[in-house]
Length: 200
Image (tube, rainbow, N blue to C red; front, side, top):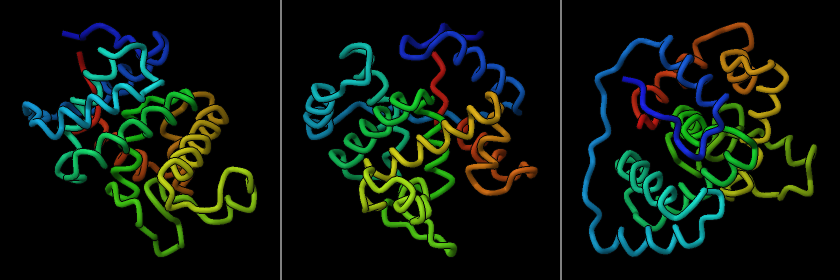
């Protein structure tokens, strides 16, 4: 059964994401749900109060708690994990992207290592090339800064998605520099399907 559209997702984007996911093979993976301990509850309460990209506090609590459980194995510290998720949600929504798609891109690009550097010199969570700092100097000068890295990554990905008229495969291939090939988009789609897609 296909569940109703999440409140934070515009109707046309929800349909597009569902169509994309229905075209992919079904996975049996499901995120393990855990009850929050006192430390996590305190951090969650603080982050929810600071979150301005959610429709309301309930929406923030549901999304942050769900994604926090899924991300815990990669970012064990509660405060760091929830702050990261808040920034991901904010920058994704600001760029009119699905936060879950951004999570999948980060999963593939850096496995949530904010200090990651590729062999080509790409840096941070979304593996941004340093030349972008020269192209948009007012955006900041440190690609290891979480918000700067996310802002660059989300803006670049949204630009490619618009350029490709909503074609996620081509936009993701552009993001990776492999336009015309599907191995990178398929890795992102697999991460999205297996771990980050939020069905309701």
